[in-house]
Amino acid sequence: MSFIKNKYSQRYILSLLLALLTSCKMQQKYSRPDLPLPGQFTSTSEADTASIADISWDRIFTDTTLQGLIRKGLSYNYDLQIALKHIDAAHEQLKQAKALQIPQVDLLVTGQINRPSDNSLNGITANSFLGKSYIEDYNANVAISWEADIWGKLRMQKQAVLAQYLQTEEAAKAVQTKLISDIAQSYYNLLMLDEQLAVAKSNLQLSDSTLFMTKLQKEAGNVTGLAVEQAEAQRQATAILVPALEQSIALQEHALCILTGDLPGSVKRDVELNRVSIPDNLSTGIPAAIVSRRPDVHAAELSLIVANKRVGIAKASMYPSLNITLDGGLNSFKASNWFNVPASLFGLAAGGVVQPLIEHRTLKTKYRTAKIQRDESVLVFRQSVLNAVGEVMDALVKADKLKQQHQITTARVETLNKAVSDAQLLFKSGMATYLEVITAQSNALQAQLDMAYVQKQRLAANIDLYRALGGGRN
Image (cartoon, rainbow, N blue to C red):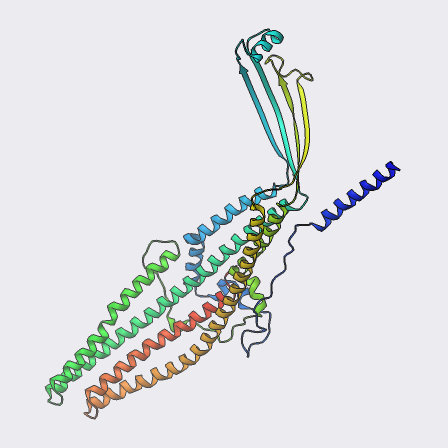
C-alpha cells in the first residue's frame, strides 16, 4: 500500500510541476494597441492603398542637380553615418544575444606551489606523505555551464535585442527621410532666393528708370525736388534687397553643403523656381499604413515590443532557474605526471535549482517598473501615430490652400505689372503723379516676391507630405 501511495504521490507532484510549467509561461505575446487612426486623411480623399511614400525619392525629385545633392548627402552626411554606426553596434549586440542559449565554456589552466610551515598541519602532512616541504598542484580543466531556458527568459532577451536592432534600423531610416526632405527644402529655398534676387534686380532697374524720368520732369518744372527724393528713396528700398538676398543665398548654400557632408561653398544650379513642376494630386494611401511606412512610428512600436519583452524577462527572473555545470580535466600534485592519462583525469557534473526568496523587493520592483515602462511605451507609440497623422493632414491642407494662394498671387502680379506700365505712361504724359508710379512699383515688387515665396511653399508642402507619409526610405 505504501508503494502505491508513493507512486500516486510522485504522479501528483509531476502533474503539479507540469501544470506549473504550462501555466507560468513568461512569454509576453504582443498585440498592437488601439490607435487613434481615422478611416481616411480628408473627407474628399478615397481609401486607396496606393501612396507616394512607396515611390523612390529619385522619381519624386526629378531635378538632376537635386538628385546629385541627395545622393551626396546619403553618402557623406554625418548624422546619417552616425545612425549607420548605431546599426553596426546593434548588430554586434544581436550576435551576442543569439549565443545566450549556447552553453558557456571556459578553459582554466593553473599551477601552484605552496611552501607551508614545517610545524603546521600542512607542512607535517607534506613531509610525511610527499617527502618534501612544499605542495604542488597543477590543474587543467574545461568548465561548461548552461542555464535551462525553462521560462523562456533567454529567448525573450534575444527577441528584445532583435527588436532593438530593428529599432536602430528604423531610426536610421528616419534620419534618411529627414535628410532627403531637408536637402530638397534647402534646394528649393535656394531657388526661391534666386528668383527673389532676380526680381529685386529687375525692379532696381525699373526704379532707376523712374528716378531718371522724375529728374527730367523736375528739370522741366513739372515736379518738385520732393518727387526726386521720393523716387530716390524708393530706389534705395529696392537696392537694399539685393545684398540682403545675396547674403541669404550664401548662407543657404553653406547650409546645403553641410547637409551633404561638404565644406561650405557655392552650389551650382541651372534651373529656375517657376520651371519646377508641382503635381496637383498626390495619393496618400490609407492612414493605417502609416504605422509601417513611417520609420519613426515603426521605431516607436518596436520600442513597445522591447518593453513588452522586458516585462516577461522581469517576471521570469522571479521564478526558479535550473543551472547545469560540467567540469573535467587533468589534475596532479606533480608536474611530471600532470598529463598522465587516465590517472590524472577528473570530472564533475552538477545541477542546481535556484529560487529567489528574499531579494529586498528588487525583483518585484523591476517587474512592476517594467510594466509601467510598457504602459509608457504604449502612450509614446500612440502619440507618434497621432503626430504622424497630424503632419499628413497639415501638409494636405497646406498643399490645397497654397495652390489657391498661388493662383491669386499670379493674377495679382499680372495686374500690378500692368499697373506699373500704365503708371509710367501716364506719368510721362503728366496724367499721373510720381506717388502713383512709386506705389505701383512697390506693390508689384512685393507681389513678385510673394509669388516666389508661395511657389516655394507649395513645393515645401509636397515635400512635407512625402516625408510625413514615410517617403524616402528607399
